[in-house]
Image (cartoon, rainbow, N blue to C red; front, side, top):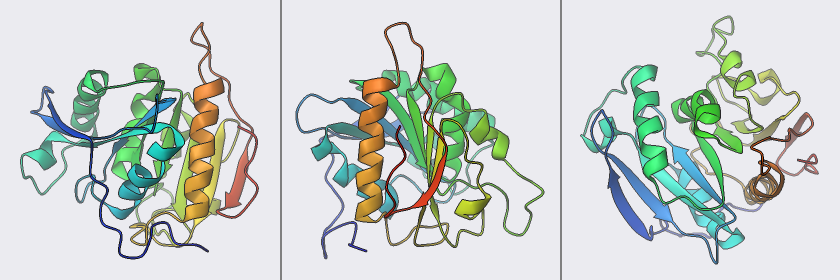
Length: 241
């Protein structure tokens, strides 16, 4: 499988870095502008262990802008403040709900993130009027505790969801995740960290999904069209959005 980035490539430089006020302190937005007028803006949140500079989020920031999707990586206030422990989910949601509307948005709004950030995106998608959610390394359950499932956050997102999940993810392998109407699960090499980044084939599918959501996800009356179910791997033919 081709690498997700050229050998030796560094982190993509944002076009702008903005501090955004929230009730929990400032969040920080790293804006990677699209080539030409954006067809969608993908706002990405991070996990509970570090900020938005993880390999998978940086791969999205590198690959999607040339395809017409603006990417905004958002560091939660606890990261900006130098904290080491993420706050409880309601506080993450509150900061996210305040930050996203204040961002430079253009085109359809797509929400996303990795791990805890994917959960935040799912929980807030309907309230923010998103056209879709991109969930990377969704933590379906704690390792070894499948009975403590968080599947309802995926199934209750209320908008189409594309999940990109490591095939060895101890928090839930691709086949454990609930596919269904409007949800696709894409398996990629790696564990929960996705330390090797997102493969090029998967990045291309994410771009196709994002453009399809921009084109079909939100109508003039605010209605949303859901896609059909699919579970696949990064080289599979993508399901029709």
